[in-house]
Image (tube, rainbow, N blue to C red; front, top):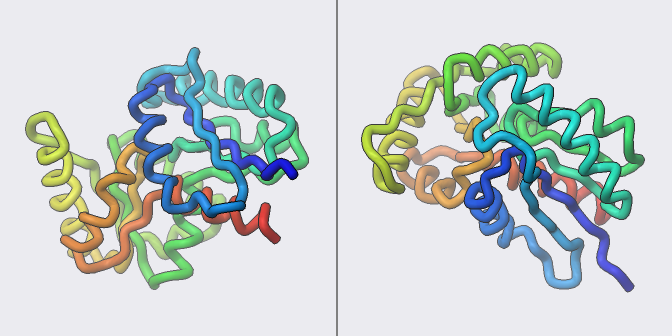
Length: 213
């Protein structure tokens, strides 16, 4: 018997980011359970920053979904969720965006959540989707990740600073507003003393529930 497939699509062309996403999902790979496959969109931008990037990636996500009709569930592993509604018209399988999954998990865990964003422009996009979901009143705030220097230590220092800023704003749980930080989730959660959500892990968890039920 062939195991059902959960397809995790990174709209970015960054192979290292896809590898980080893939490693972050090892804890959700259940013996005898669904297969979880991650891959990058080779023609996508390395970084998804602008509205044009999101529109172009949306069409590429649609093509990827059409080319993999065997998928039992699809996860769009980008917080901007490019092509989410388009992809849902192309398959009967559930298509899950990681922002939606992370936010819905967060509001089930705590009163107010905060988001570590990558840019000021991305915060405006996040707010549009929160209004669409009808949960903007549960947001304590968002703050842009600031990094001084290169490497994992500089990144983690920036994540801690951002997380503490969100706690000061009243956040009871913190969400990564990016799919590229799963390796830092548990360590940041320990440093902050509150739950930290990796959005791709949240979305694949939701996909598992859909496939296994």
